[in-house]
Length: 346
Length: 251
Image 1 (cartoon, each protein chain N blue to C red):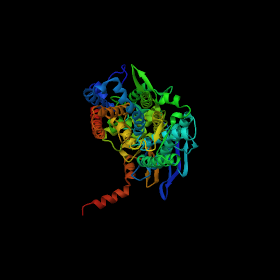
Image 2: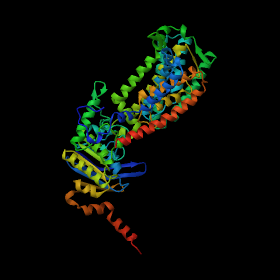
Image 3: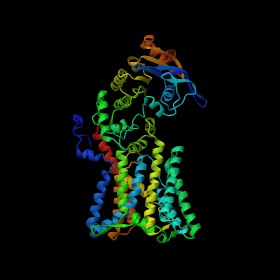
Image 4: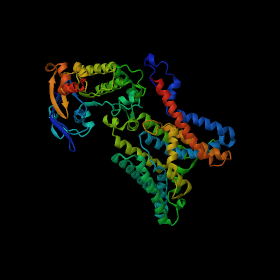
């Protein structure tokens, strides 16, 4: 990473490429991804075929968009437990407005976005103003949204789902952009994969190459120190909560446009999966350290395991077992890697 | 006089944290603030740094009365503070810490190449020998960390540098290193406010000495007006020490 022209200090002569790689937060996840891929690819021919890859990249994409946003938030030192159920809220708003109130799909999406950003803003304001742990604050928002999703849906439709988005005005255009497919070498891939790559690229750029990225690491690493040198800590955190809400809107819209209907209980339980993917990707639970690419790789591991277990004909129940094992291994690996890297640097 | 307080005071609820303290900071001079724990040193520097607002007396910068709303206001007036414990973010690299809050920009982006280069050059100019600006600050020693923070403040055009107990957690050799950077910052024309409870650290670099005890001032002395022994005695609360000695004497 250092410029070539710089004369190297004799005391860092021992820090080679290997060690430079080792201090990257996503290293553990990369190793995990290679192992998991090698395992499933050797067992299942479908898994390593282009169609198979398109198949397991799809769940990785929708999970990855959320995991990247949650990773940024976690690097900034906060959690958002309402992120999963918010994907349901945005989807429900979109479908309800477009089917029950006859709004154009695009208009409905804009309204859903505004609501999502408002909820993200609310989470951020409460956390930064009250200094309460975001775990509790967003647990509150999570439960409120969960109740509202069911309550409003039941009141409007008498059932626990809204459907019929296909007949709404503007549906085809929105579907092409958010839930369509693209052909690459004869295999059709979900367009969500492109959104995911875009989100990962933008998040990585922001983290590594923008002032906001420096502030995110700082508020998560030591908020008081950051504030003392003039970092707008509250604004940074509120922006992170709103980013998470934006990602939830994107995923909620993708899923609603794909299935044309939304169950009122969708997204519940996903919030922990996002956090797990971010942690597998190298995020510390205590904040201040992590990577967006890592979170995306964490999501890929999930996608591979999710579909790979099905390809092998195993009982899908084993997926949860696998999840837990991956999480534990990743956390241990991250700790070892970080210790080793820091030790070497002395 | 760059910075001056006149009978400044601060209360927190029913606690009188600071009462009637007057001090001054001049260009190229070191003002030491000495006092035991609970003497009001922290409250005083937090007022100077814009963290707290005083509620009695006057606070003047360049002869004009001011009231800072935030640390940013103080920074904008060239008053930089290096805190003992929260000077740096351990998991971030030296260059990221160096430019935190004042990142150089190239278009929309954080100009990372410039940041690395300038951080390395500035540290070298202060005579600070850091192995690698990419290493996390957490891997630096306490003295190195303080020194990086001082170099940062100097680079960002600080006119007044407030150092909160920079030597208190350090060994003898490390403390010497930090004192040397204080002298270097002074020689570059900065006014330095050096907070410490160790008169042996204060006396060699100090030009003026403000002594605090239980929230009030025991007086501000020029170096000519006070000897190291007098300073030590005042600092320890001479009478109290004698009493303690008496008390501890073997029966």
